[in-house]
Length: 245
Ligand code: PXP
Image (cartoon, rainbow, N blue to C red; front, side, top):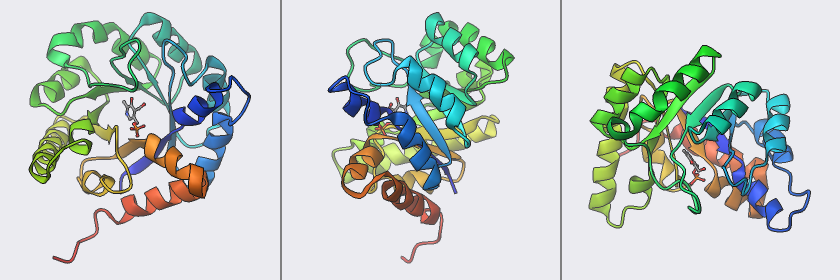
């Protein structure tokens, strides 16, 4: 069964719409863990649009499961990570002004810029993941760079406009996941996963961890974060059970 890391960024988004003190993503992290989250993920963006530095410091102190910090590979962010020491850092490409992470790294093209960040984080014993599109070249380059994990970008699968497109994107992710595992990389997956489309991804054997935010926080508005996390966990839990044809 894949682990579920709950991304709490959008609790902070709601807080920032009023520059208020609530809802507090720290509170959300505690409740998500109590409901069975296997980890907490937060993305400290260069523009501090949702998660603030204070959230990262506090969450490091209260998380008892596994903390993943998503950041760009800029030195300013690497320095924060080295100071905070999350369990895992996921490096992501970040474009100023983007609504959400728009793409995974193209490692054969961009890998050179990641060499030093990966090394600095690894030296401090932080697990390093690279957010990548599911291509053979990306898996091979991630392994060559010394990353511990790849996080496979599931956006193309999640946003497929036809059944054929969805199946094709799923096969691409499956292939990349198996190759990554063969190359001794840990495999995570995420972005745009929800209560409907998560099953196929959670069913892929090498996928160890799912990183899910928006759909869980959106559901939490109606049913509360504990139930929203429990429901997602339950879908993930049964995803690898044999299905009746
Ligand atoms: N993985 C990465 C690398 C991301 O940047 C994000 C969004 O911050 C997620 C997963 C979670 O995506 P979503 O909010 O669509 O579940």
